[in-house]
Image 1 (cartoon, rainbow, N blue to C red):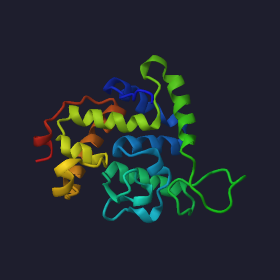
Image 2: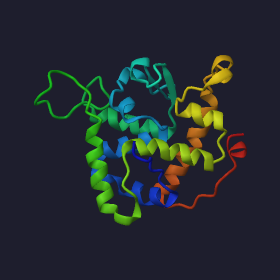
Image 3: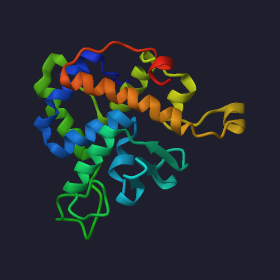
Length: 211
């Protein structure tokens, strides 16, 4: 397995403003993956029935989750807007990201995960030394790395990534931490927005930021 790349703040500040160059759908995918710390397959297999715009949640069903468990992701205002943009681009498909080429496909189908890799490779080529070459899965590692820098509690950070909690924690603590995870992702979204806009960011202790 290759070593995971965790993009630095400087790399995010270079990469995020350049995303429009790879097309709107690819741009939205990268932003959603980064902001939700999800796996590429979870996003490409997502269906609109899993997205609740009113409750601002995205549900990953057991069959799409690596640990085989249903997982509900709280959507920030930013992520909700990005999903809304994708809804416009999906042209009535039941899939959030329907396949574009119908040549070898019968009926409605989700896009292939590998499609985004090619777009990200093009992006990295244009950024040169400003941002290391990364994969869609590295966005998940990047989010986890920055959670630590933002002072997120280890347990909550692991639940944000839908990691199974081992030992007695997994047995006795069945709480899904949805409110706590929403606060973490809202703080993370503000950080992403600051990087994209080129605004200064002062790290706020999470305990104060989410109080």
